[in-house]
Length: 205
Image (cartoon, rainbow, N blue to C red; front, top):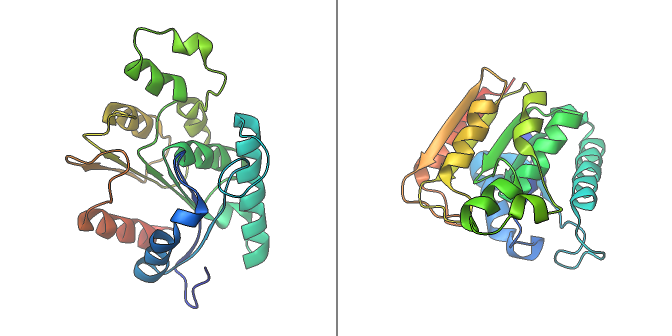
């Protein structure tokens, strides 16, 4: 979704329970309210995309999407703003660590999938059983650009404390943690968040 006068070009990576078919209104809001050219895609095995989802495959899909968007808009991969929710946050952290980014926006993102699962299923040795790791806590050290992290305090799938740890681990100086009081994992962000997002986008070099 191209903007005629964009303040940023943004790649959006959705969460595990989403697909592009559900994202139209949200992407339009990003486009209209925040003046961005925005692109979203489905990972393999999501929506109408073929294949089966694996960690390596999903990260490869994100890499291809970032490079495609950069080429399409005449930019470098590091000039793209990366935005991801939950699983998508794990994807964009991997992209920022490997390819760089103009800015990194994370919504309800875990430090790793085993970390989140271990809090939910404390009685099961999930850290040993889970194949998909998405070790974002380690990867975020490899990115030094601007970061905006938001997390709901009532998130029962990815507890807010994990988002806070991820924020504290970010190596950059320009970073902000936006706590959403009473917010659940998939709740719509309040107007105050939209103001914070605008402020973040306007501050990007």
